[in-house]
Length: 490
Image (tube, rainbow, N blue to C red; front, side, top):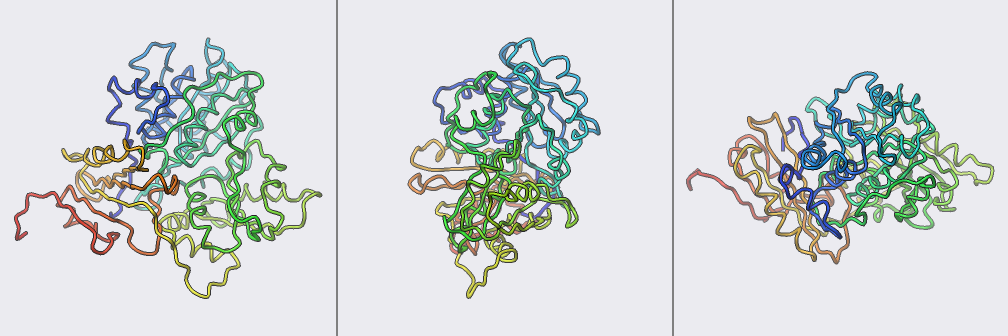
């Protein structure tokens, strides 16, 4: 699809505004097909005294669920929602509200939704926030989605937060989630912590908007107690601050913040010899002992990837890792700083082939031949449609045929290109696989294999054949369905 402005589209819109929304979210032992970001909004609505919804977050597709829940329930049940504009010093409103106390309900938090750009604007104010308590806490929900470049494509870059990561206030915890299940679990953890304010950074580029049949282990949000620290809540939920993936005798280790790129690197580890990856899921508090414990003793070089806007940007994650590994009890290991610029990020998140090529440039790998990159075990169906046409719901309806089957792993993701064609263009990607193959957490936009990866193509707006190259990723011999009023000669 040619690029205009790629706009995230929430797949929860078919339920928002209907009486079924709350019933679906409240269902016990649910296997809901709602996206993780909708469940995150549900948790924040239940556990907050008030929600401040910044305009940048609304543009990222958030806010519909919390507004709908507030409109259907009493004040005590769901939080009141305030729309607010992003600007310099935007955090002053939150500071004033926290200073007054968040709620008469002593265990409820104050929640704000904004993007990395909005959080960067709040940076000067966050250091002024008082020490948190169970009745006076701030939870910032930050979707990682940013418009970048001349075509305003969406990217999960955190480059705007580089200065903030260098000076995070001590009374803030920073969590990063990347899979649909992590987004749900970390959202619940955010409201169960009493010892700090919380910044939860989650993937809205892919995982947060993905419709799937993945279950959630959290049914309710636990009320925080004086002993509800982040270590306690993470252990209770079955997570650790750092996740190591790779061989036990790896010589090269990549350290990276949790996000779509970290998941993509996990996906191709098997084809790169002696490489492991440490994924940072809790940036603050920074647990140096935990980090040293997950890095294999065989590690010779640690490559720290910082998401930055330019080659001269600071590298906060590198300095965190350098400080942890400089302990007298640690053996000598080379620490290498790798600045991953936003332009490069946009290229390596396209496909496994481009990512392997990038990693080959920073790792001491001598390929005798180009590595064979295995394709996804799942099948990929791509729909192209007009967001304003009567056929726009076809991908969602089609996905329900598979999402409702317990023997199938199915995920649906939709993006809208607002400017390349009058009325816009919607691209919906549906992946289908067997549960026997396990859960594939690789971001849907990331293409595995070295060739085209679309197994079937559905064109619901025939006029796109004149304006867009919709066949470029289609496998040879794959079926194509075109919905059209054209005659046979056309």
